[in-house]
Length: 248
Image 1 (cartoon, rainbow, N blue to C red):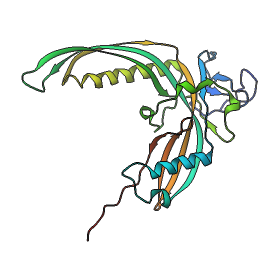
Image 2: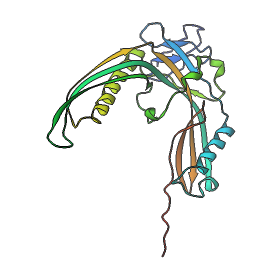
Image 3: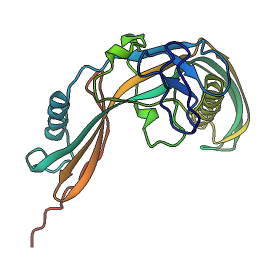
Image 4: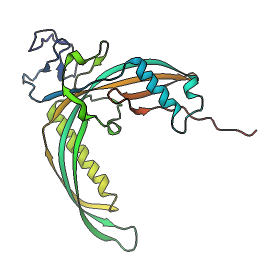
């Protein structure tokens, strides 16, 4: 791998093959790899508000609450791994308008219906090409974003770089929004005859958000929890199956 230096402080850049937007771990400057272009978009971050002890407490609170969980989940579980990772996201502000025509066949003879869908989104695109992160279930707390500041990153936390650039993120957002509007259209008609979606994109933001990845062990099996380091909310979690009560 070619050795590159930060264009701001000249420190060596640490990055993996495939990463395009690289944040210098020494000064926090945003560098664009290989293209030779300057990074001109806003680079922000969300501040992490919990330490490992606090995160474990939040996980155990989640274990005690809600339904469809084993009654002894909190007492019988051991948290075996806690790691804080700042994931790279692209926030794509979008005004999307769709006009559709479709066939409504649910009652009586089919009729042709037309309609419009108009939505505003801060569409979230993860800057990693291969990831199981549940983007659709994560609402970035944008009210807490600040300019990226390397001194706000906790010691030992991992900062991942983006493997896509801003233009790729916009293309992905447009494709996903078109699919979303097709899904919404199918709530109103049974078969789509035609649909046209126009998308207007605002100022794209590149953002790092603190995500805690937790592994806990229950009755010999490992389960994962993904937690928002800014709000303390559980984004997604594995729940062990509840054993069925047997009479005999």
